[in-house]
Length: 253
Image 1 (cartoon, one colour):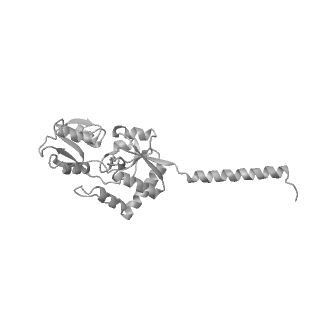
Image 2 (image 1 turned 45 degrees about the vertical axis):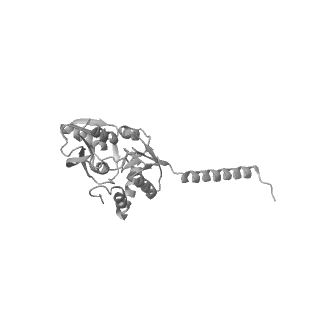
Image 3 (image 1 turned 180 degrees about the vertical axis):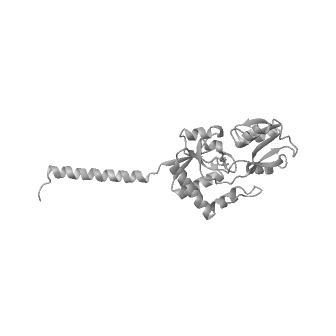
């Protein structure tokens, strides 16, 4: 057998190196980039921390299902509501799922998915059915409800969390709280008659959707495709019925 020439050895080394690079590239391709989902973790039944200290709720289950549909590797990040959009735009996570209503004002800063919860009304909750909704009204900061109260002529009392808005009514700081009806309905039911609805419901917003950084069209397209599939096969309606059974009318697509 003829000995391997120097050129032959160089060629073999090149082939071996090329094979190794190809294998590394293939391995890297299998490792998916993690998509980070930001939420508040304080707005049941949309999102909340359960008794086991874990993130739970409609949006947790829906977000996990969307990631499975789209073949994405996802992890969840909790963030205070009042800075949830700035932390998206600065890159601390990639998408928001936090009971966020789709509005023209927010759409100037972020891009929304299609809605995954239809537009439903907001409502007032007070200690009596004749509570003064033109007096002092509590609402969570940076919400469409807070903006509505500010424009209504009532005195707006803003709080960082929804729990604080409820407590302000119990403590007599506010005459009523104004929030999503679907959030307030189980609160009223659990109060044993202490808290009651006041006046008529008020339609606000364009439904609830996921928010993305402007121009992140690839991820938003994957989200929308998964949502469309879940609407078509009925699995989104199943989740809505599971998590919003306390609502007067369970929303459906």
